[in-house]
Amino acid sequence: MWTVPVRGLIALAVAVLMAMALAPAALAQDPVAPGEAEATKKLPALTDTDIDMNTMQALLKPATKEDIEALAAEWQNTVKEKGIELAHARVGGDSAAVDARKSELGALIDRFKAVVSALAAKGGDAETYSTYISAVSESPIGMEDFDDLASAGRLGTMAYEWVKSPDGGIKWATKIVLFLLTLLAFKILSGVLGKITSKAVGTLKKTSSLLKDFFVNVVKKATFLIGLVVALSVLDVNIGPFVAAIGAVGFVVGFALQGTLANFASGIMILMYRPYDIGDVVNVSGVLGKVDAMSLVSTTLKTPDNQIVVVPNGSIWGGIITNITGTDTRRVDLVFGIGYSDDIGKAQEIMEGILSDHELVLDHPEPVIQVHELADSSVNFVCRPWVKTSDYWTVYWDVTRQVKERFDAAGVSIPFPQSDVHMHQVAAQ
Image (cartoon, rainbow, N blue to C red; front, top):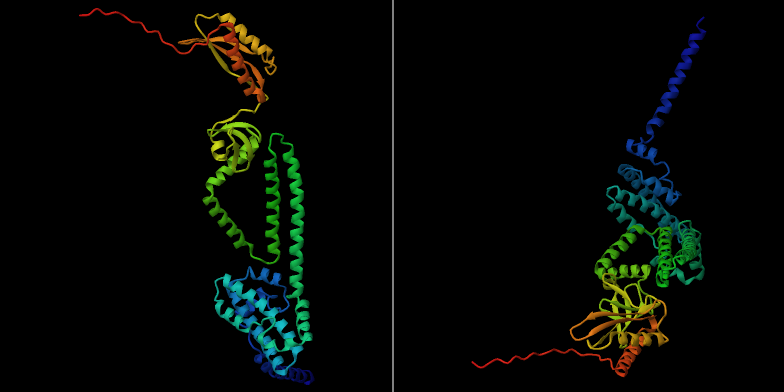
């Protein structure tokens, strides 16, 4: 009748003894600090020595300063342990082990640097860790390795280890290939966009060829510059300071060259609206001459006496522009005077005959010959034939000469200014 209780007591006694035996082992385990447990929970992959750098940087970004401080201490211990392994390999004279430990230490230091950089960005004390990194960093070929470089096999082994390292040759070869491919892609893209721009501006018939070339070159160079910035980002180059420097330099240059930029803007307007072109005779900024050359900042004129005058585009666009040869035909304005005692009809008939016989005077529009003014000393006629623009001065000089010769032959006077003086006799007082 006592069998069941006795067995239960025996089982309870055995369970108590086993718990007492296991308690010391459980108590012997190191407790995990609350901060470390929380950091490990939040950043589970950042203690992995094989973590990818991009993944590591992405995980570090949302981490707090306290998380990264705990993580930096762990990585310092990891780097320390690998440095001790490298020291033992050197003492043992195992060159292969030294190379392997160097490569491993370099990879660990790269990740440790990322952690320290993140700590500094979050306002933590990163100076101590940076000093430690500088002290334990290993160059690819240290001073102590110079004696070993006498062996070509040794140098080849070191080069091979660096090339096959994920953070060494493989990493940089991939980045360089991507850099070159990016440049090539944007170079091709700039050519395609340049052709599209050329066809687009080609439809603008009134736009000068210089402005068309300017638009095409701007599109091509701007596209390639964007490609260069993108390609530099592939090499992990921080392009933020680069872009900021370009902006600062652009501001300084723009402020220093504001007059030139004003001429540049005026040049674009001139090339766009084309009030004149190369070969036209113009009167701009008080200078009369033939347009010899044009650029985005100035216009070069050749005066009738063969002088070269360079006029800034800003003063041209901001003033009055007279294009003398801008049309195919032009009116010649002449004024001829006869005496008050001469026959008006006869003088008009002479001038009409001269214009009708001249081969360079156009029939349409018809010439105009009319009495225009009763001046102080003469009766003035206006004589206005129409000619081709290129024949303007030839007709001007020919008609002037023939009018003088025909008037003289017909007895029509061409008076000069004269005054009538009336004298009155005054009796002596």
